[in-house]
Length: 214
Image 1 (cartoon, one colour):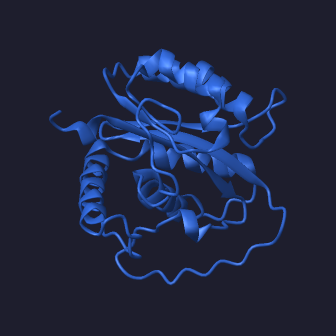
Image 2: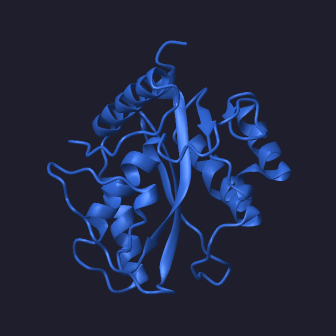
C-alpha cells in the first residue's frame, strides 16, 4: 500500500506529573542541543493520565481519564473502553478519516478480550495490537512517534510556566497539542520510517539515544 506509514493511527497514554517529573525510559526530548535534563521528584505527586492518537494528518485528543466526579484517575480496562466508546470513535467520525489502521501497545487494559472486540468492531483487520489481527511487537516502547516524539515535545512546553494546579496543566496540554501542525507530524512519521529502516538493518537491536532536531 502506497504511503501505508501515513495511515497508521498510533495511540498511547502518558502521565503528566504536576511537578514536571519525566520518566526518561518512556520519553525523548527534542532539542537543538543536548538538554542534559536532570529532574528530582518526590513520591505521590499529583498527575494527569492523558491519552491521544497521532497520525500523519493530525492528533485525536488529548483525552484525560477522570471518574464520574471529575477527579483524575489512572487507566484500567473499563475506563479505556469508555474512552473508546464515548470519545475516540466519535472523534474519529468527526475527523472524517477513512481506512486508518489503529495501533496500541500490549498493556493489559488495551488487550482484554472485551477491548479487542470493541476495536475490531471499528477497525476490523486494521488493528495492530497484541491479540489483534496484526501483532504489535512486545517491549517496543521506543518505536512509536508518541514515545520518541510527542511526549517529550509536549512536556518540554507545558511546564514552561511552572503550573501549580492540575487544571492549569491540563489547559497547557490542550493548548500545546492543538498548536501541533500537520507539517510537523508528517516529518515525525517520515522519521518513523527511518527508525524502522535502522531496526531492520540492526536486526532489532535497541535504538541509540538520539536528540531529534526540529
